[in-house]
Image (cartoon, rainbow, N blue to C red; front, side):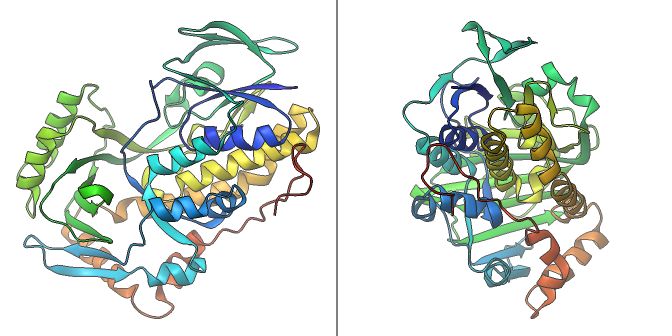
Length: 401
């Protein structure tokens, strides 16, 4: 039985482990966090990622965990609606196969779908990789040296596997000129159920979304060309306060809530572009290979697609990993390139840097309520133009359907 070490227990890693098991492989999942990550931000989930979740039997659980958002509403300083649209347009574009959920909830459901036989190592990370003729010798910070037939980096934008096997992040990262932060609190006194609210001033946006259990999520997207972020929670809070100093709408109350949070997501908005997603016995999937950027809206689905295709090509190649890696890239390269181009066009829409940019963005948003306008403007970015293969898995009697 072939052994595969997967780095990262987010979206791509558990999805890959699930399908590798069905291909007759023995996956091991290593995650540097001490447990599954919680909180974070919400994602819109549709397309081929949704189809893969269906093949995994996860749609009922996703529906229970998720949200059927009715409206995106842009508000002024006093909270009055200035633009927005109902989400029926996305139902039309996706055939009603569309849901919003917290990214960590999707990660948890994918993790729970793995079989009990999958080895999982928390609170550890890869510190060195040495490829040999028949295997990869992996050095773990806590677990010492172990050998695996293959290693897959599913460890996100700041991938350790990519750094060790391919080179520094700076060689592959393209910063898009924005930063992002998010946190959640309990008991915030303003709630608009199933409505995503946005307040935007030139170069900075605040989003608010009501979560289950009395929680509220705040998301911040802001212009920042430097792309250098503070490391500690205290410094991140201070940086966010500096960026939003003088902001209006609910910022004073949100700033008070920020004081109470103990888990703040803070990062830059970037893409990863690589000529190759594999090297020898080592491959990358998801954001580690081709991050389209957090604001693109499909990162989690793309992570699942890449995991499914890589596992399927390994199953089809019957152990010929070079053939499998080449087929994986050939099948997805043009599709991912198109998604990255779409994300570049979309990045500035959240926080336009000028008053005119804000005005123009709001006019575009208003146009979404016109029949056919949304399909014309974003239909090519919403619609997946890729045939998802039906692979035959060693552990299944028939092809996945």
